[in-house]
Image (tube, rainbow, N blue to C red; front, side, top):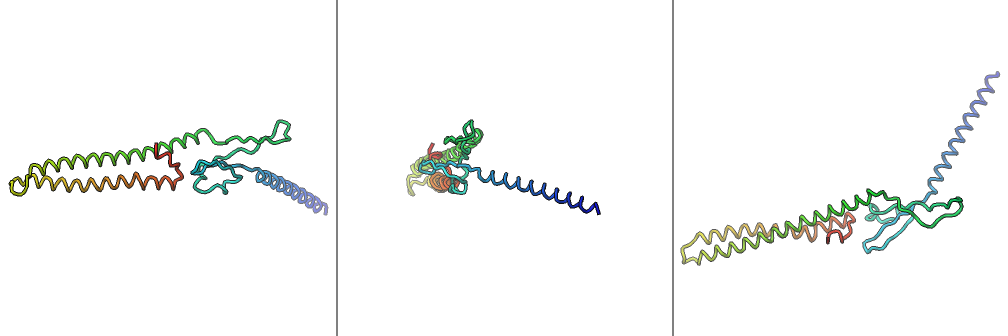
Length: 190
């Protein structure tokens, strides 16, 4: 009979310890939830916004939102300072610069393809004009000039398509992809 009260005491002690741990865990979780973080973000117009939750930041700006540290208490632990410190690591800024460089490189390459295609078109146009000058018309008997001019015109059509594709990439495709990725428009102009 003595074993029953001891088992009961051990059970109650274990339950009380478990309850105390659960209570402490709940308090710790509540404290964590009470910690509020502010997020700072800049919209397309350059307006800086600060909000108290990442969910309140529009989706297209979330990847660029900066988490701000909670207000710091003064040394006495009493009051709060109203200054906030950015918690962004230095490599986050480096990553932003890398992203900017990638988009600028992409635009630079597309502009170079456009310029190269336009230059090639000019060269072909000049060659075609020279070939037609050699031809001298149907009565001249120099059919080679006309055949050469027609071959050049076919190549010019292909180059014209390359120009249109490159221009579309510079004016539409890259800017639209950048907009969807939340890239500031100024990155593509530099």
